Length: 306
Image (tube, rainbow, N blue to C red; front, side, top):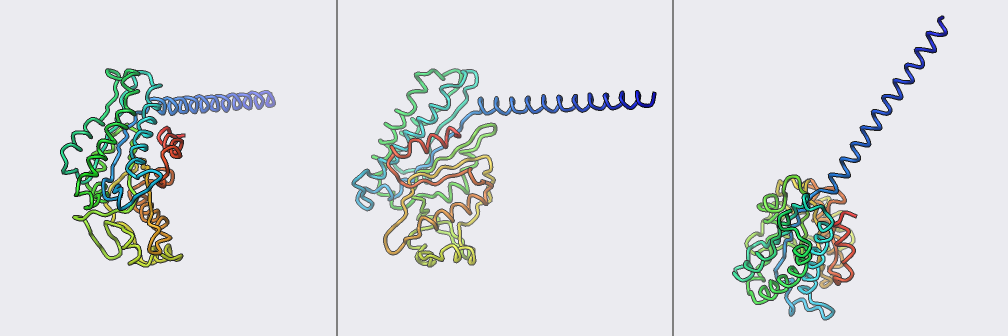
């Protein structure tokens, strides 16, 4: 009798464990299914910040293989193509995706602002036909080129671009929407300078230029030790950007005046700054000013999350 009771109790325990395992497996299947479903229907919110400073000047920074502003136009087209690729396969009822373009400061040339309005897209179930979606990249290529043509006529592009101020005052309101996958693409040489925003707090600043890198003696092989021991970097802007991914394109570090370590210094400055705003490894990437044909896969893989 005792042996029968023991066997019965053991059998019930095994059945209970099996039941618990089955419940856990069902829970994991449901969780994985939900995660996969959410990924499939997640909506994109892509913002582009254009640096229209003198980096695009065809005389000061002439590049015979392809001028930097034309590279930018190529990048714009590739970003728009990646946006198209990501949304054209979604079911129409799931369409709620955005793409827009910003400057800081806003150009004084009203034509540029008018042109940028042509590059605001909000694709929904009401307008998201295949024909409409397929027009986005060609629209960005055409109006993007027109924006740069106007910017090259604008004498104020020598004043710089207020990237630091954009992060401080606008990025959260402009580029982050709840329940979206938020991506900010920045077209810049990654130096930061704006004539009306040159702030310094001890060894922190709101800008970084080749001249400042030399002044801080960061143009030598011990640049990292100098940065970390003296706490060099950008002034924090106290923003939580943990729901944002950032792709910086067009990096063109100076190779003159013994600035052989500019790329490393710039990457360190930017990375520390972004980490301080809640971004993690993999949430951001920096890419050199390569020809657009060489950036196709890189840009599309980033946006399509491959």
